[in-house]
Amino acid sequence: MMRHLTRARHAGAMAIGAGVAPRRFAPYHLAMRLPSVALSIIIALAATRPAVAQSLQPKWSDVERETLEHFQALLRLDTRNPPGNERRAADYLKSVFDREGIPARILALDSNRTNVVARLKGTGRKRPLLIMGHTDVVTVDSTKWTHPPFAATRDGGYVYGRGAVDDKDNVAAGLMTMLLLKRLKVPLDRDVIFLAESGEEGNTRVGIGFVTSEQLPEIEAEYCLAEGGGTTRIGGEVKYATVQTLEKRGRGIDLIARGIAGHGSVPLASNAIVHLAGAVARIGAWRPEIRLNETTRAYFERLAAISPPDVAQHYRGVLSADSAVRRAADDWLYEHEPRHSSMLRTSASPNVITGGYRSNVIPSEARATLDVRMLPDEDADRFADAMKKVVNDPAVEVRVSSAFGRPTGVESRLDSEAFKAIEASVRRVYNVPTIPVMGTGATDMSFTRAKGMQCFGIGPAIDMEDGPRGFGAHSDQERILESELHRFVRLNWDIVTSLASPKEGAARPRAGQR
Ligand SMILES: [Zn+2]
Image: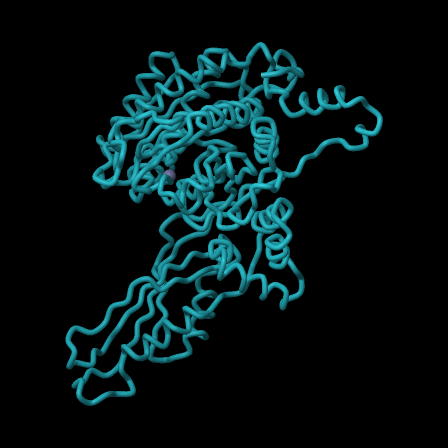
């Protein structure tokens, strides 16, 4: 769900001009002493050294043909949710695993909305690694699509179809990684588990909710990879990759105003509509305190480092110890890059308002429903108390809904082996920096993080310009560049092999070219 929120189209990135090159980490001190040819070889080797031995590298031209075949097959399965019918995708994936001799199981709460899990055994020296992707897609208005949404049409270097970037790209890349590990007999220090789950777009009960509560041993892992991150291309050039390491938690809060009912011809000071309107206006103008965590701090620092100075100053401004500087930067972000403003705090947006039923009756009650997205460590009661002070009206109740929509998870650490491996893989595959990001929306990782797994959201490179043109996730067209789908498979392969294959012995990395 909500990849349109999490999968990059950062407002901030829009500000990075096409002329801004990503940072490079060339060893300048060596440049003083070595001929330029030798230097370029050193840099090339450092950037391209594969995560496993050259003898274990796939033949990528064959891999690309097969990737497209599976990807198109998955796109052609109509798994729009509702109703889902994810069984179609689960059966397809299971048949591929069966053919390949990879043990796979169907996990089902609802026989039409099944999940599939597959496992490659490792030595057990390390705890497992899980690769996840969801098989359901959001609904379509077919009349708005140039290429039919479930035809997987190839045109001009793109593949079109619902799910192309949410999330059948992750599913296909995970599938290919499993097939390659098995065929190349890559030695594994840890089990590699693949999960394709149903119901991510609003029915987690049949998908990740069911799997984590009823079938946890099937997927329990130290680390997991899923959707939620992205790789940003601007002007056809990849600039940076975002990796989602935590996400906000949605929790509803209602404002309920109560007054005395009466005849509309006699205005009353206790009018519930008037009290509610005042409360909503005050909440709308309120920006709760800025609170950064490890991820958002690193996010703004790293984004500043690759952004033009006029924008970078605002990213640095929110990190300032000076509250006036912070406030000014926050004002700018709120106006120009509201998603970044939301990343700074627990946010509250009044989205539904109800009250009254005929023009000559003063109603006794009126209600506003707020979409509150809490920082992962937010204390809901403390936040509600702060909101009450802002509402500042005893006639208006601030009522927190009883539970979070999704569970609370741990923050995936930036100093973990997994994050470092992802960074190194991004460098090898794209030669760009990695920026950790906190999702303002929610993904299935909230469930796996709640079980103690450190999860990281990754995604293929997408043109920044594609979203506003209407080709993004959940749009009336959805597409992915074939070349970037293939690069994403390499990214998955590189991350998984560097995390799961032994560092010593047969698979010791050797310098080489891909
Ligand atoms: Zn998704």
